[in-house]
Every structure is written in structure tokens, then in C-alpha cells.
Amino acid sequence: MGKHRTAIMGLGVRGKTHLKAMLENPDSYEIVGICDIREEVMEDVKKMFDLDVPAYTDVEKMLDETRPEVFVFVTYPDLRLSMIELAVKYGVRAVSLEKPMAESMAEARKMTQLCEEHNIKAVVCHQQKYLKQMQDLKRKIDSGALGKVKKIFAECQPWMAQLGTHYMDYMIWANGGSRVKSVIGHVHGPATMQDDHPSPDFLFGEILFENGARGYLECGYFAEQHNPDMYRDTDNRLTVWGEDGYAYAETDGYWGECSSNTGSKLVTGKDPGWYHFQEKEIQTPYYTEYAQWLDDDSKVHSCNIQTALHGYEVLEAIVLSALDNRRVDLPLKEIDYEPVMERMKKELPWFDGCDKEPRDLYKGDWDRPERD
Ligand SMILES: NC(=O)c1ccc[n+]([C@@H]2O[C@H](COP(=O)([O-])OP(=O)(O)OC[C@H]3O[C@@H](n4cnc5c(N)ncnc54)[C@H](O)[C@@H]3O)[C@@H](O)[C@H]2O)c1
Image (cartoon, rainbow, N blue to C red):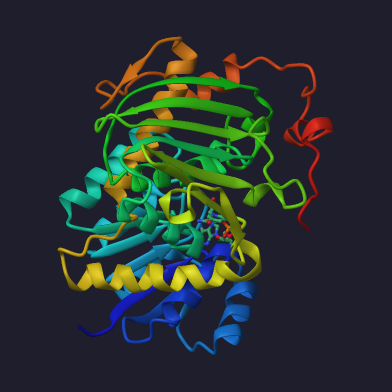
């Protein structure tokens, strides 16, 4: 179907991964412009990828001069809604952005609404679904080897806005896209509100899906360490329990299965995992699937913005439930309440063992190696 004219903004750690993945789909994307506020980064990127395209420090100038069909922006959550507004202004047909999708529920809804109104195909990067061990887990569920799905358990050492947003999305994916009906939640600890991905130090949510399955999501320091020798940002496990067995997959490559396939014994193994081999590999099929959606309306990408919005809404509901001490039913109707981030900054008390900053949380029982 030809190449999609693509402009990309934000060429930091993740931006380079996005760019590389598009270049590894050479029949689908033509890069027509790059943008970053740091000129030296753009020089590096041009050399790294042997790229001879116009470079901009002003994103609006890039969109105005290059008029791309696809706009990829790989920045922090404070630059999401304004980028979608620019996409609308310059007639962009598709946008690709990073997680977490927004800084508030109102913003997440507005972004999704703008994309729907202007027929913009939008994806939010919850790409760990493409890890081999995750794809294998999904095949096990879909093959029926685990029986009817009853419970889905997501455990993440990193906090809500870092990995919670990913694993919430994977719970919905593992459960065949069923929407969430009601949640109850717990949050504690204000230290991580100082992070560039503000979050409670720990969050736990119990989730009732419309198809009757239950979900249990925990993220933050108090989550179980499955592999203490691994870095905490990859110690995340998704476990699916069916009527006939269970299986799990982790970001760091570990997996396990106990089902009729394994003679009802727990069999475990390890794939290469996120940092070691797969990080660069999973973004390429992500962009292959995106091009398929751009070419064919029926091939909707698994990371489409509507699905991401629902995951965002479930996390929001868990926090609301915790702050208000009540069950929260979805969809959320009135959202013109005081933003939950502001409330958590004010309302979450400090506690013994954490009285200064997020690093305190990982001392003692929660000690982990630090990644450079
Ligand atoms: N999906 C994942 O697995 C994953 C992993 C890590 C990070 N992330 C997310 O990716 C996002 C970016 O993270 P990162 O680690 O790449 O950050 P980064 O700081 O390495 O890169 C951000 C880039 O954006 C540029 N930038 C900032 N403001 C700009 C502006 N106004 N115009 C143009 N360029 C601008 C910066 O100069 C920088 O190069 C974050 O939201 C983070 O949560 C996702």
C-alpha cells in the first residue's frame, strides 16, 4: 500500500527504538522529518541510522513543512494532548505515542475523543505484548489449555505510571478484551509522587471483568520479588489462572505453565527477556502491525488508543476507590472531580521506612541491584 510519510519527535532512549523499528519496516514508512529540542541528539541519530532528512527543534514547524501522514511523538506525558491537538491542526492521519497516555483522566478522554472525531488511528506503546514469552502465554490461553479464564494476576515492582499502565493493558488483552465492570483499590505512600512518572508508592486493585473473570493488579515496591537477582524494572509477572491450569510470563523472560500440556506439573523456563535481547526486536513487529492497520481499517492494532483509554480508566478507578473508600463502577461518568494525582500528593501520608524519596522504598527487604 505504499510508504507512510512519517515525522518523529523526541529522540531520546525510546525515540531511537521507535525510529529504528520504523526503519526496519522500510516498505511501510518513509521518515520525512525528525525533531528534538537537543540538536546534538539529532546529529547522533542521523549518523546512527544514516538518515538524511530535515531536522527541527520546533515540532510545529516540522509538521507544517513536512505534512506527514503519521506523527510519532516519544516524549513525557506532559506532551501528549497538545501533540494530538497539533496532529489535528495539520491533518495527520495517525499518531503513535508512549505510555502513560496522559496526566489525567480528563486529558486521556479528550485525546481519545479528538482521535475519534478526526479519524486519527492512534496507538499507545504497551508493546511488551510482543515479547516471546507473552505471545506464548496468549497462545496457551487461546488454545484452551488453561480452561476458562478465572483469575488474572499482575505483579510489578515498578510503580503505576511506569509498569502498572503496561500490565493493566496486558490483563485486558489476556482476558480477550473483556471490559471492566467494577474495582476496589488500595494506594499508599507519597514518595513516588516526586518521580517523573508520579504514582503512589504501592497500588493494589481488585477488578471484576464483565465476563466474570477477576483481576488482581499490584504495582510498586511491596509487590513480590520473583527474581531478586534481576533488575526491579523487569520483575513483572502476568499469571493467568483458568479452570484447568495456570501459566505466567514475565518481562525479564521467565515463564511457567501448569496445565494438561505439562502433565499438570509446573514447568518453568526462561526466554532472553527485555533488556538482553528482546527490547529492540519487539518494536519492529509493533510497527509492522501498525502499518497493517493504516492500510486496512479492519486490522485494528492491539495497542489502539481506545483500549489504552480503558486501561487508564481502570487505574484511575482503583485510585479513586482507595481515596474515597468505596467500590467504583465503570465507565466513570462524572470526571470533573479534583484530579487524583493532586489528591494523592496531599492525602497520602509518609510512613516508617519511607520518609524522603522513592529510593528509600527499596532498602531492607526490598533491596535490589541498581541499573546503570
Ligand atoms: N513502552 C516502554 O517500554 C517504555 C520504556 C521506557 C520509557 N517509556 C516512556 O517513553 C517516554 C519517553 O521516555 P524516554 O526514556 O525516551 O525519555 P528521554 O528523556 O530519553 O527522551 C525524551 C526526548 O524528548 C525530547 N523532547 C522533550 N521535549 C521536547 C520538545 N518540546 N520538542 C522536541 N523534543 C522534545 C528530549 O530532548 C529527549 O530527547 C516516557 O513517557 C516513558 O514513560 C516507555
